[in-house]
Every structure is written in structure tokens, then in C-alpha cells.
Image 1 (cartoon, rainbow, N blue to C red):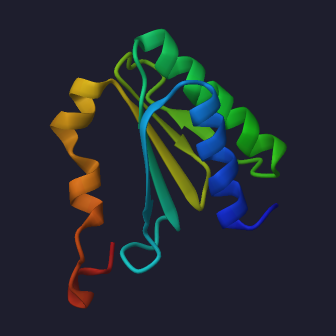
Image 2 (cartoon, rainbow, N blue to C red; image 1 turned 180 degrees about the vertical axis):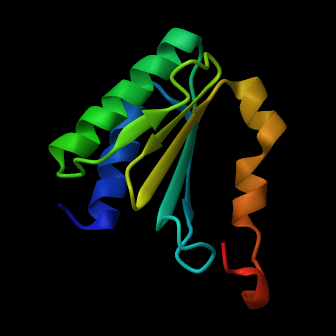
Length: 116
């Protein structure tokens, strides 16, 4: 597998090429042990969100992340692509605004609360 920073760039480029909106990358290394990076993007419709998640999954698998998968298959407003060390959330803009993941994960977390 490629280095995680290279993989992050591949995913961001894939989202950008496929017209994802408001792509944001958040470094989780000092905030959580669940992943190194979280990427958040918006799609314009349920079909666009599904297509974006499938494109990202394909890129992850082609880059050697064989255990990657899509969560939220039944949702038309949100998908999570689990790339093991890289998590990709793709939202409908209204759902993204509701959950405010950027705000939650961008804030500095005191060291005593780091264990997740």
C-alpha cells in the first residue's frame, strides 16, 4: 500500500475529478486512534453521492487497501468509505451541515479525552 499521505491525495483528486464539493481533509493522528485522516465532501444528489463513494472505494482497493468498504448503503444522503487509516464521509449538503463533522474533529482535544 502507498503511504497514507499519498493515498489521501489520490482520494482527494478522485473526489475533485468527479465533481465533489467542499472537500476537506482533517488530520486525526493526535485526536483518535480510529484513523490517520478523515476526508469530508459533499455530493449534489443521492446518485452523485453513491457514485463518489464507489469511485473512492475503487481507488482504495486499487491502491492496496483490500479491506475497504462502504457504510450507509441504504442511505441516500450519506456514505462512509472506510479505508482503514483513511475515512471518507460523503454527504448531501444539508446532512453535512446538520452533523458538522468538520467542527467536531477540527477542534483541539485535551490529551485526557484522546482515548476513543
